[in-house]
Length: 161
Image: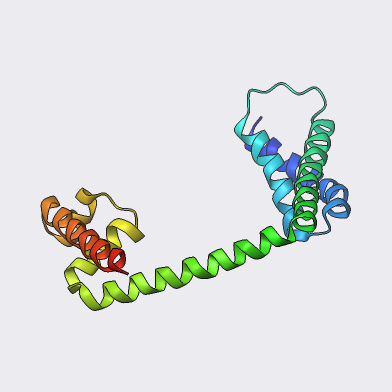
C-alpha cells in the first residue's frame, strides 16, 4: 500500500470509525487513540493481506473499544468490591511519600553539590555510572564513590531510626 493509498483510506474511514467508537467509549481522546492505534497497526503491518479493508478496520476498532470497556468495567468492579483495599493503598502512598520526603531532605542537608548531582543522574535520570561520569566530566570510580558513600549515609541514618 502506497502512502497515498493509505492517506485516502485514512481520510475516508476515520469519520466512520469515529462514529462507531465514540458512542461506545464516550471519550473523545480515547476514541481518537483507538482509531489511531488501528491505523498504526495497519501501517506497521504492510504485508498483511486483507480482503475487505473497511471491514477489517471496523472490526479492529470495535474490538479495541470493547477491550477498553472491559478493562474499565473490571477496574470499576474491583473498586466497588474492594474499597478498603483502595483506602489502604492511599495510606501506603502517603506513608511512602512522607518517607521519600525525609530521604530527600536528609540528602539535601548531608551531600555535597557534586554528590547530589551524581546521585540525581544515577537514580533519578537512570544513567549508568559511565554515562553520569561522562556528563559530569569525572571518572566512573568517582561516581561509584559518591553512590557508595551516599548509600552508607542513608543506611546509617535510617537504620538507627
